[in-house]
Image 1 (cartoon, one colour):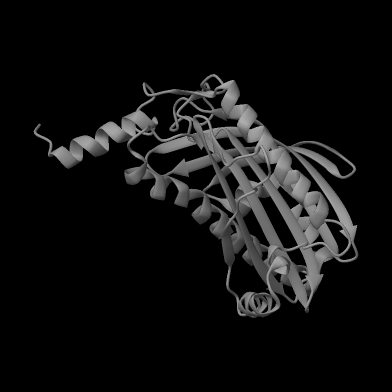
Image 2 (cartoon, one colour):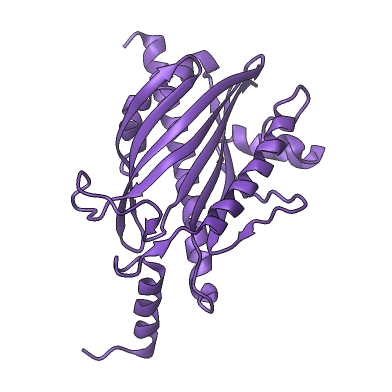
Length: 284
C-alpha cells in the first residue's frame, strides 16, 4: 500500500504518542510526577485562600466588576463558562519534564435548585456511570466515612483510539460557608486496561502505558444563591508529553480534549441535577 507523505507523518505521530499501538508505551518518570505534584500543591495553596471568607469562591468572582456582571448574566442565560487556568508561583511551572499538565475550570448555573436537593445526586458515586455515560462505564463507592469517600470509576475514552482506565479517587467534602460546599476528588490510582474491548481484562503496569492519562484531579464547588445553584469544576490532569518537533501538529488537538470533556461533564451535571430535583419535588 502506497501512503502519501502526509499520511506517513500522521501514522508515525500517532505511534510516537502511544495512541495507535501499545508498542509505543510511555513511562511516567519520577521527575514528571514531582513536577505535577509541585503544581498541584501550589494550586491547593490558592484554593485555601479562595475558601476563606471573602475569597473568590467561584472563578468569575475574581474578575473586574463589569466582566463579572457580564459572566453572571451569561450563566443565568444558560451558558457554560470554561477557561484555561495556570497556577504561577516562584519555583512552580506548568511546563513539566516529559508531561503535559491540563488545567481547566468550568461553571454552570442551575435555576430553581437548592444545594440540599442536589446533594443526593452529587454524592451518589454508585451511579456515576448513569450520570456520565459513555465516558464512565462503571462506578461504585469503595468506602465512606463522614465527609470522606473513596470511589472507583472505569473511564472510557475514544479520541485517537479507544482506551479504558480503571481509576480510584479520594474525595473530601467541606462547607466553607453558608450555602457553599466543595468536593476535592484526588486520583489515587490510574491504570490503563490492555484491551479496551475487554474492560474487565488485565491492566498495563501503572505508569507504563500509552500515557494518555496518568493523573486526574477534580475540584468541585457549589454555591446556592440568585434563585439557584452554581456548580463549578476545576480539573487538573497529567498526560505524556508530545515528542519534540511534533507539537505544532498535535498539541492544539491534545490540549483541547480536557476542555471538551469538562464542558460536557458540567452540562450533563446540570441536566441531571435539574431532572432529579424536579422528580423529588413532584414525589416521583
